[in-house]
Length: 387
Ligand code: NI
Image (cartoon, rainbow, N blue to C red; front, side):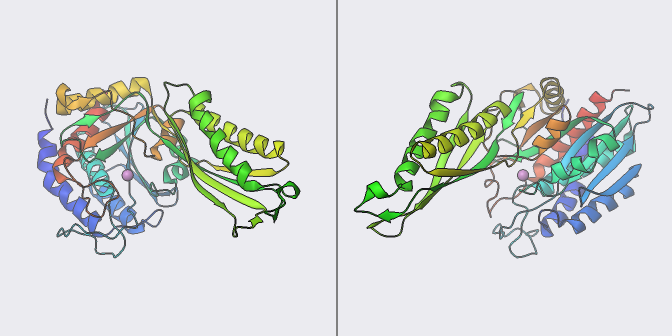
């Protein structure tokens, strides 16, 4: 079965919403005008309950099925734009200098609004659909903030699903995989304190540059000797700051870098080994290493059963040929990961066609993808809440 007829009819309207949102991008948690627009539309569609201010500026709409009480499933879109100056030249380009929807969250909102409109009109399911609009996906942890504000418990959400557009994947195609689909992106900083001194008398100093160099080398052993070779892990030292003169051994050196991991195990492994290697090597030489390891978003890990449900819904909409169920993990991060830590669910990729890349000033969400995303949400909700 192809795209819903109704979703095809809805495309123009959803494109208008999308372009309105695109003209008025807002950043992180400061998405009040966007949230007002969303809440207004949901009320206009007859969504039963519209709750604002969850996780500061998040919005949740609850739609009750007409087949009676039952479980609640969550469908999530993100609302925030990026601090990028738009260069698309489109008629609906951003009206706000230095801000644009360069990640397609405008399209994500329009698709979930379209699905909410359809589901509120038809209600062919048992239980409830929670449409979740979250702020601050781009680095602010808005998904986590909504969970901490009671999102899952307050609305008894049993399963949760997310979707992101993907440039380079044809319009009308979907991609998913069970297990890790997006990375955790952490950062670390190591400050090595030795003892400064005259470069001609190294025996009286404790050289943090030599120690730092050994630490850089030893950190390469985390991936090559500590991590399971069939699991992906990246540990990169990207900064090394030390010294100021050719004849002085400095007292401090500072290293910085990034860790990309796809499983909680590898993430814990990397953090633990970085600390042990830096502190241990420094101690061996009589220096001290202070390690700061900052965990940003966790890996986005799809649950097995829900991934199957998501893939089935996508196949219903796009056909089996257009759904890749073995998508190669993507090294970017996504804060839907927090929702998948809180509840079973799955994150799916939707084709945006041959567009500029995400976070690029020439990027634009492809309105041709709207009916596919709307149909996917509707089919998924109806299947998971079959009357
Ligand atoms: Ni995004």
